[in-house]
Length: 387
Ligand code: FAD
Image (tube, rainbow, N blue to C red; front, side, top):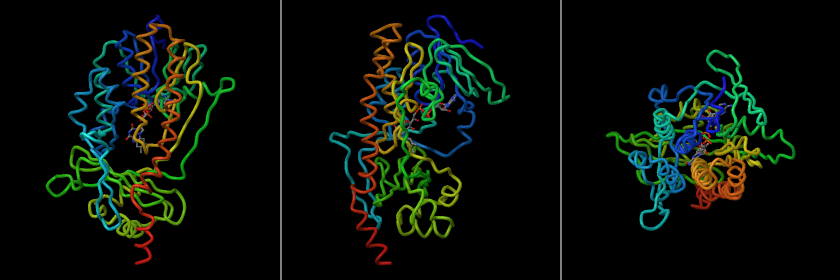
């Protein structure tokens, strides 16, 4: 199989949030885009899937969505969060606004956003979307990609003259770059994982917690947060150590779990009817920061999104930064039409310092959120001592 090898043919690896948005930008510039995704079409499973996972969308993200004319559509399904609401060990609340004049970040459904982007991709005559296509390895100089059709397990090769790696934190395109001389690469994991836990709507389908806030249960060395969904539920995320006295490892039984939540998250527990199934059946996700450089190889290939700069989620900026990559790339294409070497070089020079700074801020904000927004160590000690 060969992608369009004329001057305006480009290939994107990964149809996640960033790859899908990028394809719309490239198509706007009249490039013929082939986009490959190892998973099947998420729209087929999305409605059955049911479990809602959400993300905080902020100004950087909105700007990028405006650039392809879909911000208004997403705004209709986005819930503004004007501040953070802290829950202490007694279930008492305190509120900190994010800014003046109703400044907000917005809770949006990850799946909903991806589906909206994919629908637009499908309608665009300049874009071909190929599902169930996993990149196994890439020869960036020759422009040859070894692909696996994940449905029939057959391998085949595609040729491309320009490759955009939007294939996430464990990018195969980046792996090919890593094999080039003197390549800079680092990955660092937190000793914490995360687990998504649902907070149910109230008896009449209403939001059981303040709808227009990002909720935080700061508990010193760990925390839970929750963002609102349109159906009245919240998606809670527990950021918790893998090992230790209080950790994923220490909560092995239903009784341990309920006892722990009853003491530590007493106001949330009654709102979590699926807690046991969620905790023991949902996967535990890891939290990684990945840095690398350069992000490009001549005019042949470039990385963007998590493939270039995966960060931990505590600043809510991973997707937003990936979307901003698309905004910047779009500007550079305007300024240097078809001069891909210059576009890629300037792109990485402009973006790398910003995404490195974001990576540091994101780790620091974990400490801020879990510890400094309240004085939970004291509260936690008091609760345990008074038991
Ligand atoms: P991905 O979303 O990982 O997409 C990559 C795509 O490439 C996937 O579809 C994958 O299947 C495909 N792919 C991978 N390998 C191959 C291959 N070999 N061949 C073909 N296809 C391949 N960000 C925010 O801005 N706000 C938030 O509130 C926020 N909250 C978060 C909460 C958590 C718990 C986590 C873990 C992350 C959060 N993020 C948030 C970060 C955000 O999820 C990522 O930054 C974003 O998903 C990156 O998008 P991407 O398209 O670059 O990568």
